[in-house]
Image (cartoon, rainbow, N blue to C red; front, side):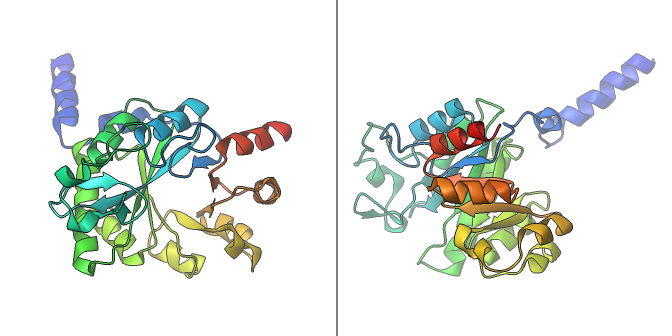
Length: 263
């Protein structure tokens, strides 16, 4: 009888709309390296491509950052700029974007396909930046809602942290998913407000941290510090000496070399 009750309880747990895999996902790579738009530079891969994501995974990066926009027909795609090879994403259908190819022959990735590629492993986090559009706040709200819904649909919450230059975007994510890790990019908000609003940490340009006291205060508040986009060895060393949690870089290989030299 007891075994039967246990079996029923376990079945109830795993048939609810939760992500049981996240319960055991404590295996993320133990380093501060976040590849900016994937690891693309050294091998001349397209930025924000699935190939650059796979290279970041191969290198053993803690995280791989990527950017999300929404097409006119509400398809979420991964691309840094608001236009894709001369086509304005917000004005185009996804089918129209397929008329262009990345330099390695890939089509512009959908968020769904990009996440599915990242879900094939359990070592590298997926750092999802929701881009602020020039369309309207309502457009950004819809992009945000659909992005979080896609993450939930694929049961990818354990893999995904969110970042944005839009404070309202991050607040909306927290409303939809109170457990989501969100970090702000713009650099104009004090740590105390980030903490009060339930943010995971600050994700500011490294030059912001060169003014004022950030590192000790973040530790006191229980916030993480990520610095972007850090490509010079001297800046990497300064941040490592300051014990920041994460460093976003176009040069993940150089950051790994710098970390190795410090051992």
